[in-house]
Amino acid sequence: HNELLHSLAAAISSPQGPQIGSAFAQLSAYLKIYSVYCNNHQNAVETVTKLCKNNPLFNQWCQDRMQDLSCKNMPLNSFLIKPLQRICKYPLLIKELLKNMPEEEKDYTSLKLALTKIDETVKVVNESKRLAENQQKIFSIQSLLENAYKTQLMEPSRRFIMEGTFRDMEVEEHYRVPDASEFEEEGRYYFLFNDLLLRAVRGHGLFRRMHAIHKKKKEAPQATISTPASSSGPPAPTDGSLVATHLLLLKKISVKSASNLVLEIGHSLIGKKKLLLLATKMEEKAMWVDKINEATTTFLAERANVENRKKEKKKLLLLATKMEEKAMWVDKINEATTTFLAERANVENRKKEKKKLLLL
Image (cartoon, rainbow, N blue to C red; front, top):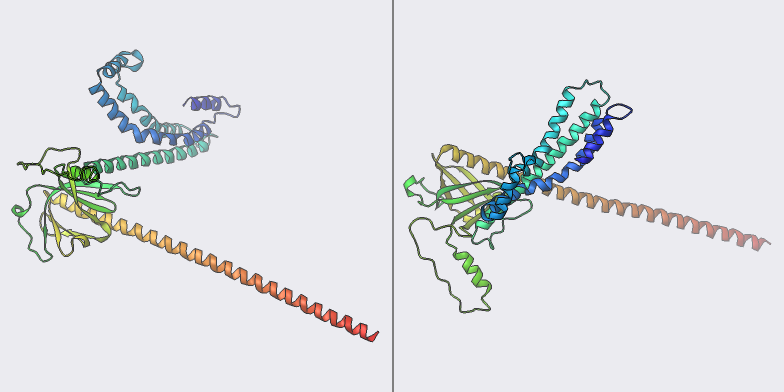
């Protein structure tokens, strides 16, 4: 920003007249570094909040800084958000400049170009922040799963879409739609991603202990597991409070409305059986049906595009191979023809020389 200040000062005092557009255009290339800060902003805010709560010395330091006149009685978190606000203010500033500048002004075109470049950069930064937040959400879901070592959710192309809790049941293919009273009392947890639907139930910490014991099996072969005592109501959350029961890939899923508040999910993983989910509202059911169908359609379309690109690449490679083969045959035939004609000419010349010698 100091660099921008110097560039603006030089642009305003330019002998050719103000050229602030070029100064802002140069700035746009540097704004992408904001994506790193934006991606970590939420973590920074949470860290400061946690330190203020658990560290009296740090909290006192923050309170003392707030009293400083230069801080204007603003907490540290208010300053942490300033860079995010600043990157969004540049386009607004340039729009105001354009609004109050005649179009025939020499700097108008360059300022408009600068606005386009900065808008594109802001979009890149916002998209980077959105993806980072989405990945953080997937990580938080992963950390809830007791059997996370069997369920790897963190994938570069995976995106979280929505989550919800349903009372559900598994039924045979030919079923009657059950009453609400027949569904399980305890809710099941559903997480929709761009490529799969995850179903989970409340856990007891058992899976984590089983996995820890399995890892130490060689050192302690006689180790045993004690099942936690059952209790009324849901168990208290632990470091892992859910157990994944179904990972349903969207490429093999089907979803439809079964009755008033019930939606039906079919998948090859559960064979001829169906999962029935009981929603609390019609709007909730409709939204889940729409989102699953939309995600499935998008996933299949993207997968088809990938397959088409692979086929096109294969065709191009095959064509290139054929072109190389064709070029090689052309070169070899021309080379053989040239050699043959040269050798034939040499033979004819030797015959003529021999004939001359015989005449002599």
